[in-house]
Image (cartoon, rainbow, N blue to C red; front, top):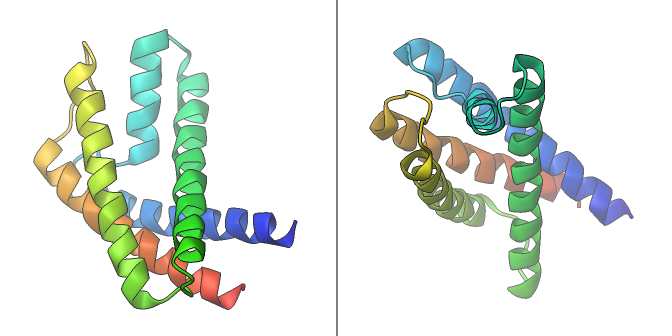
Length: 145
């Protein structure tokens, strides 16, 4: 049970850290690179939900994705018999960023009315945000082993 609690806690910290980065870049660039808001917008446009339900769904999906990424990281470490480190956090964050870009690109390209954002800028910051996620996840996992 302690392992599940630690993984959940690590995912919340890492997801929150990357989200703070995304929000700060959004503000700096004047673009919507805010993953929870974009997800909520997809939900709203797809299911015609209320603004409140869409926002809640966007944040929920964002943190749920963070949990999934944290579980995958834990499983990869375990299968390779490795401890969390900056090097594997960096590698995992980069790979997670690539997976994020592919997933978001599929969403944008297959939605009939996707949210408006500078996709190239979004994808660039998304990879950096996931590197921050991976490094934070690794540092926090090591601290809470």
